[in-house]
Image 1 (cartoon, rainbow, N blue to C red):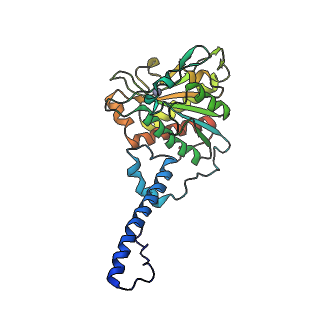
Image 2: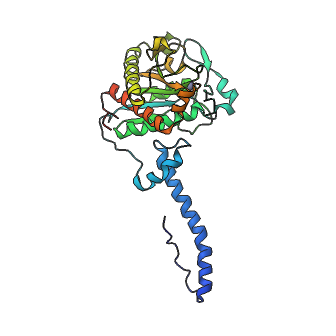
Image 3: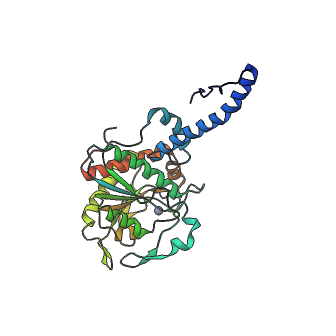
Length: 305
Ligand SMILES: [Zn+2]
């Protein structure tokens, strides 16, 4: 921002007085200009990476000059595809205990509307991690032409509940849906894993049509995530395959579109926490997600760069 608002007010004859007047006017003008500039940079970052608090400030100066238009290209290998990304939990869930503890129908049982999620030993919350990674992945997938919808974008007081998270994917008729999490396993347990829906046919749950495509999505995602992040499948899940199948997650049970959960690492392990709290690593994680989804959908997002 340049210092050019110094057009003197008209008709002020003595030069010394004019200078005083100008500087008195210039201060609020500059403050205002600074405020607007920051707002624009912040919004541009909000569309993709760089919104995750700690790294947002570092990314802002480069973005201000480089990327004046936030809207992604509508054409690309994933044009016409709809991807729903679901950032696990919500930073404000802890303030709404009664709301998130409400039981919801997940077909084969009842579960809490939502949970607070875990955090690193130093207090970096899972909900902050998931939203940041999902925003970064959205940017990468949009750049490949996909229509990307989030189940929430930091704009909800709590939740959404797990049944609504599934319903958002169903209503969008998503070609693929990915719920992003990080685990809270004991220290020493490391690595990522993908959770795929078991065949559940009970009450309002019927995953029978999505188990096969979800398995395909999950295996693509696991392979891409390992490659992009350089991390290994979880040591503590299903013999280290990185692939798990569950029938107790409402977000999977109620899905009618191909969907998986991705547990990116273990927040309670110091080494994994070092990765999860790194903005650079989160960008790699996002690339792994985008590449895996694109591979499943038949595009090539992320592979080229
Ligand atoms: Zn979680």
